[in-house]
Length: 453
Image (cartoon, rainbow, N blue to C red):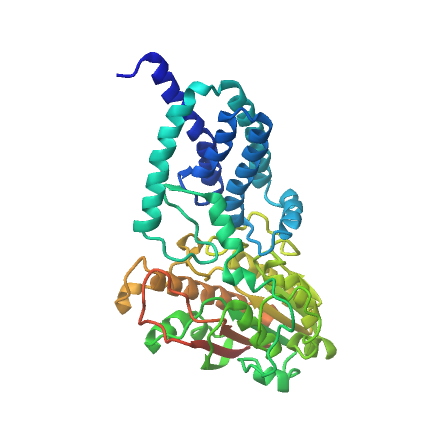
C-alpha cells in the first residue's frame, strides 16, 4: 500500500508529465490539428531538473515546447526550410486573430509551467518519475516495432498514444523529399516535357482570356462513366462549348506537373529558390510579351515549393497566395493547409472582371491527399453507384473532385468569363494512402478543354 508520501509523489509525478501534454493537446483541439497523447521529449528537461540544473532545465523545456508546437504549426502553415520560419513568424501577426491569441497564450503557459516546475519539483519524485518513464518508453518501443508505422505523407502526423515530437520533426526535415530542396546545380532537364498546354505555346494569342487550371490529384478513372459523373457539372453547363477530353502520360509530383504545363520542363531537383535561368520561355512570359496580364493563384503560402521566387521568373506579374493578395484569413481547408478553393473562386472571377486580356493560372489545393472530407461543402458524387466503398481515399477524392468542377461550372457561368479558353489538367495521379485501388489508371492524368460562351 502507498503511504501518503508515496501517493503525493505519484500524483505530483503524473501531474508533471501530463501538464505540458494536456496544454498542447488543448492547443491541438483549438486549432483542429493532430497530436499524440504523450510526448516523451518532456522527460529530457525533467532529467536536468533531477540533477538540479535549473537554468538548463528552463532552456531545454522551452526548446522541447517549441518543437512540440512546431508539430502543430506545420499543419497550419507548412514549410520546407527552417529559414522559412522567420517569415512565418511575421505572417502570424496578420493571420487569423484566433491563431494570434493561441500563440500568445502558449508563450504565457510555457513561462508559467517553467515557474511551477521549479517550485513544486522535489527529489522525492525522481524514483516515481523513473518508473513512469520506463513504462512509457517500453510502450513507445513496442509501438515502433509492432504497430502500424507506415511512411508518412507530407502532412501525415503521428497520432499514436506515445511518441517524440522532436524525432518526428527531425525525420521530416531530413527526409529525402525535403532534401531535394537543398540540392545545388541546374534544376531542369534538357529534354522538353509535353503537357496539356502544348498548343498554347504554339498559339498563345488565340483568345483574349485564358484560364489554365492544374488540378491537384485529379486522376484518369478506369470507368469512363465515373469520370463523366465527376465532370458532369461542366459537361451539363450551357456556358461551356467545344469540350474535349484527353489523357496525358505522367508520373511525378505537383511541382513537376506545374513546370510541365507552365514551362514545358521537367525538374532534376526542386530547389528553385536560386534558379534564375531557364524560365525565359515559360508560358506566362509569352503571354506577358503579348500584352496579357498574367496572374497566378494558389491557396497555400507563397514560399511553399519556392513559388513566390520562381513564379515571377516564369512571367507572372501578379501572385495571389494565402499570405499574399487573397486576403481571406478566415478561409481554412484541411486536405492541405491553405485557403479553400470555393473561397478562392470569387478572387479568380474578380480578375476576369478587371482585365480585358488575361492569362490566369490556378493551382487547386483542396483535392490534395489525404482528401479530407471537412473540405467537402457540396457532396455531389455517390460512390455506392459505382461500387466504390465509402470512407476510402478513392471515394473522398472523387467527391472533392466533383465539388471542384461544380465550383468551376458556377464560375464559367459568370459573364466575366465569357469568351475564355479553359484548360484543366491533373498535376499527377491521386496518391492513394489508405488502399490500393483499381479505380484509377496508373501513370496518367486527365485533361478537359473547352471554351465559354
